[in-house]
Amino acid sequence: MAEELTPETPENESDRTAEAEGTEEPIKQRKNGLYPEVSDELAESMKSGWADTELHGLEPIAQAAHTERRRAALSARFPGERLVVPAGNLRTRSNDTEYPFRASTEYAYLTGDQSHDGVLVLEPTADGHEATVHLLPRSNRENGEFWLDGQGELWVGRRHSQAEAAQLLGIAAEDVRELPRKLREATGPVRVVRGHDAGIESALTDKVTAERDEELRVFLSEARLVKDDFEIAELQRACDATARGFEDVVRVLDKAEATSERYIEGTFFLRARVDGNDVGYGSICAAGPHATTLHWVRNDGAVRSGELLLLDAGVETSELYTADVTRTLPINGRFNELQRKIYDAVYEAQEAGIAAVQPGAPYRDFHDAAQRVLATRLVEWGLLGDLDVEKVLELGLQRRWTLHGTGHMLGMDVHDCAAARRETYVAGTLEPGMCLTVEPGLYFQADDLTVPEEYRGIGVRIEDDILVTEDGNRNLSAALPRQAGEIEEWMARLKG
Ligand code: GLY
Ligand code: MN
Ligand code: MN
Image (cartoon, rainbow, N blue to C red):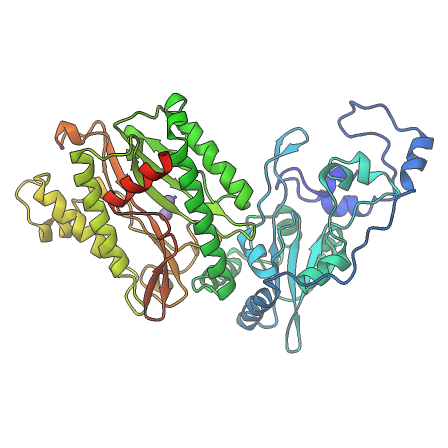
C-alpha cells in the first residue's frame, strides 16, 4: 500500500523501502476502509485509457545555475564523502490529513525543489561529487496506487516524472523508494542533514555521527550568510508583498475592531498565500497590551481605538524566502502623546541601528547602537533612578524593557543561518550580501510596577530588513513608512 511510501510520522521510518519492494501487490480498497472493495472489473478499467502526459523540453528553473554553484561549494568542503540532504516528510494532522508541507531549507537551497520525501545525495567522484535528487515517482496505475492511495496523484495532484524533474532542476533524478536500501548497502564516509527524514536517518544510523553531521549543518547555515543575486531578488519580492499585506491590514482595521486580532492575521495570510507561498512565521498581531508579549501569535484579542497595534509579519515567497517586518500602528490613525514619545525613541534607535549596518562593521555594532539610544531615553524618562547611561549599559539594565536582540540574519528561515558558528555570525563582520533585520523595541508590561501607570501595556517595535551593500546598506522594506508622522499620513490615505 503506497500510502506508507511516505511515512506518516518521522518515527515511522522503515516503511518506504519495505513498500517499494511490494508495489506489485494490487490495492483493493482505500486504506481507511470506508469505501467498498474494488471489483476486478473496476480495477482493470482504472489501469488504462489515460493519455500520456509526459512533458518534454522543459526549461530549467530560474535558480538552476545558483543551486549548481551552491552544490559545488558544498562539494568542495566535503571531498570524498557522500552527502545526504532530505526535504522531509509529510506530517499527519489526523488520520489521512496532513499539515501543510514545507521543504527543508537545506534541500530547497541546494536543489530549488520542494517535493516532500525528496532527498539530494551528493555522491563522491574522482573530481568532486555527482548530484542526484531522489523523488517519489509518478503514481503506479497498474496496482491502483494512483487513485486508491491517499497520496496517489489522483488525490493530491500530479508529480513530476523523474525525467521532468531532471530537466527542471538540472540534477539527475531517481526513485527515492530505493534510496534507503542503497544507503544501507553503500560504503565510505557519509553525512546527513538531520531532523527532516527519520527513514533516511535510520538507514544511515550505523554510518554517521552527530558531530560530523553537525559540521554539515553548520556549513549549510554559514553558506547562506551571504546571499546571491537570486536570493536578494527573492527577499525584495518578499518585502514588497509584505508591504502590500500591511496596507491590506490598515484598510480593514475597522473590521478588526469589530471582531478581533484574527481579522488582521487572516487578512495578512490572504496576501501571503496569493502573492507568495505562506507566511514565513506565525504572524504577530498584537493589539493593546498584547504588544508587550514578544511572540504574541494567539491573536485572539480585542482591537481597540486609542491603542497600538504591533504587527510583525512576513510573506514567504514561492521560492521560500521570507520577509520579517514590524510596524507599530495607532489603531485610530493618530499616536497620542505618550505613544508618540515611546515610538519616537524606538524609531531613533532603529535609525542608529540601520546606520551601523555597514560592510566591514562588527555584526554587534547595530545592536549596540540601538541599545545606547534606548538606554539614553529610559534614563531621561527617569525610569532608571539616577544611574547614568554608561552604567545602565554596563549592567544591561535597559533590557528590562528592550528584552531582545536588535536583529538577526534573514533569508529562507526567518532566523536564518541559526547554526552558524559565533565567529562567523554574532561575533563576525558584516559583508555585502548579508541581510539582517534591525528591530529595536520597548515593552512596558501591563504589570510592571517600576514604570508610571500610563506606560503600562505599551509595546513598540519597528523592524526592517536591511541588505548590506558594497558601500552601505539598502532597506528592502522601505516601501512601508516608519517615521511617526509618515505612518499617520499613510494610514489616513489607506483608511480613506
Ligand atoms: N518575527 C520574529 C522576529 O522578529 O524575530
Ligand atoms: Mn519580526
Ligand atoms: Mn525579526
